[in-house]
Image (cartoon, helix red, strand yellow):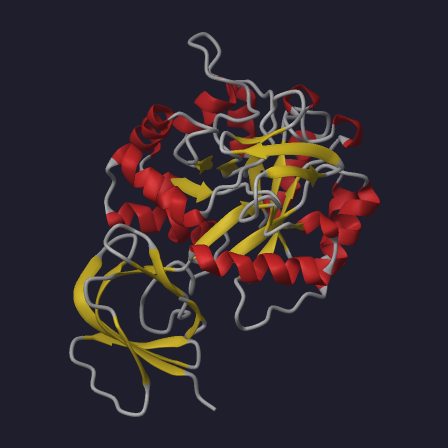
Length: 382
């Protein structure tokens, strides 16, 4: 049975252009045509008037949601997370691991390796390995006792366990063996992201010359900017070969710091992420993160020592906050919420609304509230 929909009179927004009041015909999960006055019968019709159509959001850095976490290593946890994310307009994400015992990481990777998405869920596009190849000086909420030096053999073993699903890795390039690791993984086509790092500006530039092309959660757990020592923050912001993640919850970064990054990097070099943990979308309280207790309130998710431990941010809230902080264009929001992430991962059919691209959309009201999420041409949330 074919799966066809027609969206009428909608404002389509891409990273580089938008089209007012057009129709979109979708069949079998792909965009067939984008033009005015498409007339078809016996088909599901969605009235898109006074609404905005974005490519579905892509979250490259998310640990958990709805009470579950990637590190649970369970099929039911992955399904529950993937199902919960469509409510916020996410159609694809990287299930993100954290610093833990190696067997715990491997258990999580195996679960993802044989995971199959249901049609009403956001798609697991791959895995983001965050830790254990990080700096002991910038641990944040990563358990210090499980940090180890970068090891290519370990990574290759993990990639095999995951069925080739690892797409991104956060690494501190300055630690022992770090630069060789960056070079080898970049050759393999992995998005190497500098994070949880105490690198100097010179070490950042060396890592970028070896293939690193992203920064993990800008400002957080990276050597800060100082006028005599620009650190990872300066190196990330000033190098236009690097895109940077940012958590726009106004807890991890002040609105003016968000604006500062936007002015320096521009929308084409920023990737909005949530870095959410299992407490997203469930009541405030105490939750586990990698064996550590995290206390979650309206002021964020914190370890007992006060350190931030991920977020409870949603992607739709992130775009509204970004708009508020920068007054950026809708096109800029598309770049930062899906297009840049898709480009980093070489996913040509994601993050765009064009003929033959995947029919992954989020339909938004004028004030950027999710009305419908469409995955592979099927309405999965409204």
